[in-house]
Length: 238
Image 1 (cartoon, rainbow, N blue to C red):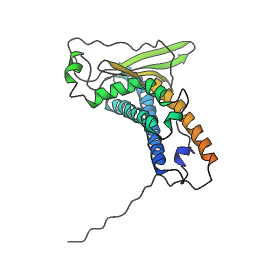
Image 2: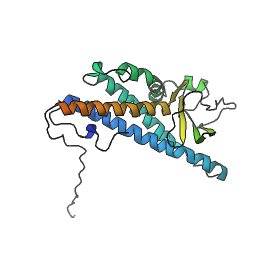
Image 3: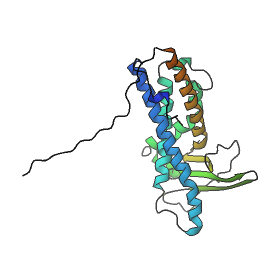
């Protein structure tokens, strides 16, 4: 999503620390969202291959780990984008109001997850899963169209469960061989594929804008970034 030489990783050292802080936060949100989504999109088609072989995993936790990590990172990015210095000057369709509107479904299902215990009665009455229901479309071919719809509904099952098949009705946001990844929590559904495609275009806009802004300033060395260190521990002999 971000370029290897992204300006997010080369912030000039004369940048105000508060602005650098927001740029760092945005960078991390972009990176975590991209990693979580790419792992999710790579893993879901494997389930369709495993199903006829009776080789489905014993737990679907890895898929939900990535789905909810994506949701969390996207919502954090939404807030940082809105509160960053100079946000009021960002043009359409990337200004905070447009991004906030496009990512409202992400915000709503994150609120469900954050207040799961408080909303338990509502969730139980809807006969849905505590982890949410994850569905997607695996795309084998676009022309001619050859696709398969699948879903995961984790947790205990009621005597009757209402599950709606994932049937794309609008533009498909295809990533690899997967499209239309939906996460439903309580009575809210978020299109993760749409959110990811929105983030890709936002990242491109942000990088282009930063490069232009940094080019106008006095050339200086960038801040250092991503420190890693280790040390050996020595213990006195008894």
